Length: 412
Image (cartoon, rainbow, N blue to C red; front, side):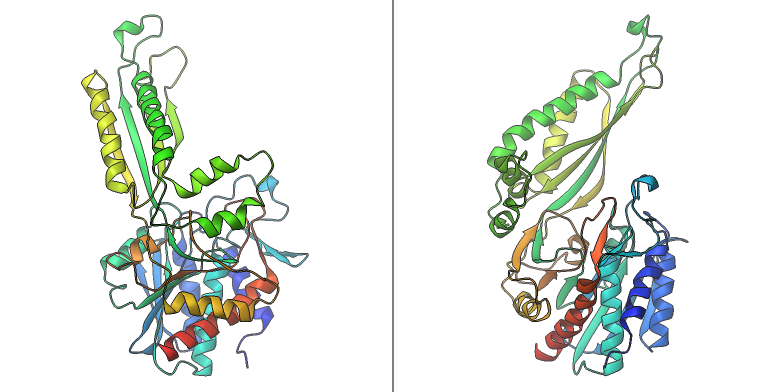
């Protein structure tokens, strides 16, 4: 018999959605779960990064196998409150869905894992092995929380890893890498009527951006990934594309290297030569054109620009390698089997890599391609206005995690 009622399970999600963790303040969610785990005699502790940020680690059971379960506590900015149908930090039920920032990405998955841990502990249904719960900070920007967990060896004893990012009905076993570059251009200010007395910082930066974009146009035609087989994902999504989306462009973005110039700024006022400008890029890498090759590409055009009189420098503030596993292991096989048993309304479950990036980039460092990794969780519309999770599916995921985790630890 379940220890918690459905109302209590939804209340837990409601409580953590109400805690504003927009790229900070995760310590309050960590403390909330610690107090909850204390009530059920589950050992847990905070792993602080700062006064406002802390991972939470908890575990039940003992010995091998050790399966890690993980989710992040931060959320992205909610944007304009007025664009939301309901207050983004008040979990609101409407027509079978629960709305709120983080309802999909990924407080519903995190809550479902925490509740599953409680239910397994109370029922004493784990006969051997260990379930290690890891709630992380900063996944949406720099992944500082998962990096600290790796650096402190919390992941060293893992035999398998489950991350509850929103992916239903796709069961994910691999994903691209991600890099963030900040390119800074320095010039010299002067009055715009006598620009020759200054040095325009914007001009060489535009040239640099143009060079990267031209190179990318060639690369995206020649960097299809053979290591990450996205055929299932493409087949599952193609029929849902809007009519105005070119399917070949869609396939290129899914299967290939992706370079996006997402930020550019420079200058202070219109009648002054700008002395400072910046551009930022996000790059989604694949094993065939990995992070090191991207660094070489950016370095090449930085050197070219500086040889021609520019003063460009770069900062790489995110550098996460692709996560590549084969998906041919007992965790993925069991995950698919249990999904078919628990989610009665879904006829087809897709096993595939994803274009999203997760904490697995840090948590699975030093693990090989045979390592059992699975990403599977509830939620719709991550990062969007009116982000939501289907109420029934959220509750079903709790039962799914209980069954999957107890079966995995007891059988393998």
